[in-house]
Image (tube, rainbow, N blue to C red):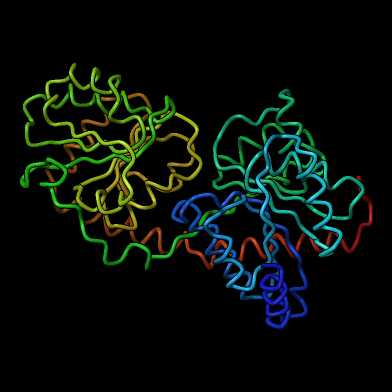
Amino acid sequence: MVKEITIARNLLLLRQTTPEMNIKTLVISSFKGSGISDRAQIASMLKMHENGVYFHILLNENSPKQRFFEEEGIATTPYTIKSKIDKKAIQTIRDIVRTEKIDIIHCFNNNATTNAVQAAKKLNVKIISYRGFTGHVHWYKPSSLMNNLHPRVARIACVSNAVKNQVRSQLWRNKKKAVTIYKGHDKAWYEGIQPTSRDNLGVPDNAFLVGIVANLRPMKGIKYLISAAKHLNGHYDIHFLLIGRGMDSDKIKELINETPLKDNFHTFGFRKDVLKDVAACDIAVNSSIKGEGLSKTIIEAMSLKKPVVATTAGGNPELIIDHETGLSVPIKDPEAIADAILEFKHSGELRQKMAMAGYQYIINHFTVEQTAQQTMDLYKELKTELETSKKVI
């Protein structure tokens, strides 16, 4: 394995032929899943790697992506960070920074950041933290002061303007530390996806199918979507597809049984081929009440050319512009959700218009190339700061 890593690093050095991009970055992220959830992050990294950025990745032990990265010529160190303050993780990060002469530590979760700020003490290195949700970052919370708001964090990369604005509200000085970098998607990821058959979902072929994909958490506002069915009495051709961890729970079933369309709900837990299920729907819904950064499920639905109904929570308005890229509704408003569902149901022309407008909006504004370029620009900015100031804290 050591020999393979050495070969990979040598290949990488040979590829880096752009002198102005002499930037070395340590990325700290778990990469513990199969790759679908990290796909946008990985794609932008590979694009930057092609353009001369040197990456070293600290990722979870037994990560299924380690071999993939090494085959791409990217050095990796497997170590699972176990807590907010993990002495071995801190030492591992320090060793990589010193040995590889790292310029930037790019952290993609809170444990990564809290350990990185400790590891970076008195080292001339810049730290970027990551925020994917609105809320939970507050100047009076010790946990925030240990990671995103720590003075050693040079930038906070936020997935939407909504997240950026919330973070900036908690920064007393240098509010420009919080910046927006959207996660880019590749339209090719969504081409050729065949819809799950209605029969396999237990849904009549002639049903108007409303789908939502979310893990059951209060912020997702699932109860408001279910309550929307109370305003759809008599529309027995409308069916609901609920997918995600907890969606098939007794709690959800109790809420469904209180509606006049209780027989029209089809609930599932986690499903591996969820994009095929979304492709089987007529429209997609996001009923969140808070916390949304930049909803991956909305982007996926739009990329699959599905009309979307979404609340105004968090970064949703940056994706769904009312009657331009989809239909926008207030939070905690079941009747408004019901009205939007009916508006789409009664107009095939509107569905087609919003589906195509939403799709075009994604491929124009949320691409891998744009994410990579914005991130490289940030790296260059921080590299310049490193070269003009030798102050370390």
